[in-house]
Image (tube, rainbow, N blue to C red):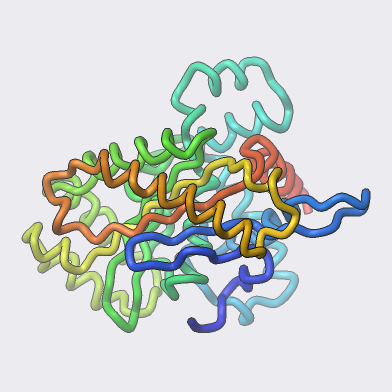
Length: 312
């Protein structure tokens, strides 16, 4: 596998790596208090590195000087908080505002997985060698409205594959898998793909992504569902808390691997059992299973960093 864009190999452990199933754990390390814990700070730092590319759908990397990079990070963080769900989650997790907490507990915000989208972007870039095709943040219909459509729109330039991904960040893995299956049912049909191809093509006209003209042509001329499915990979990311972090200090050990593999195989069997899409034999699904130690800590730490980024 080629060198990773964001060097996630130092924080994220790739465990299972199969055609239709990939699994990850976050590495552990010795903390200042003398105890071992998951590397949540390093994971947050890694995801923050993804932010400008995720927001702006570019990857100019080393061409950006340090001063411009700071500006782009600040602008990217502000762009995220213009999206209603990010702002509500920030107010609930970071500032403990009761109104926002009530909305999280009672409404759809409780199960939204925006940070899952950032993580999916990272994993596709580092483990599938994709590049972003359009900016998901700029998919908003209007200010304050969350973007509709796929959680990731990437391409594999050498293979001419379109990656249309979905992500879920849930308190339990089965809940996340159920939500991903629902997304499959709702998003992979003629009408929805018609709509999304138009939106993607419209956004392509406003950027300088490599192969832009090729993909505008492909999205224009490819009108048959059968042809579209052939050129699409569907990464489904499920981010969920896992007790394995309380069981093992060294997640790279053979004992930890055995426990992890058993759990992931059982979850994959659950997914397969409930996968009833009419196009089941035609869709190229790749299930990404990402285990974290604590969902609330993960969300809170990311909001802390994002909020402070706006003021740097």
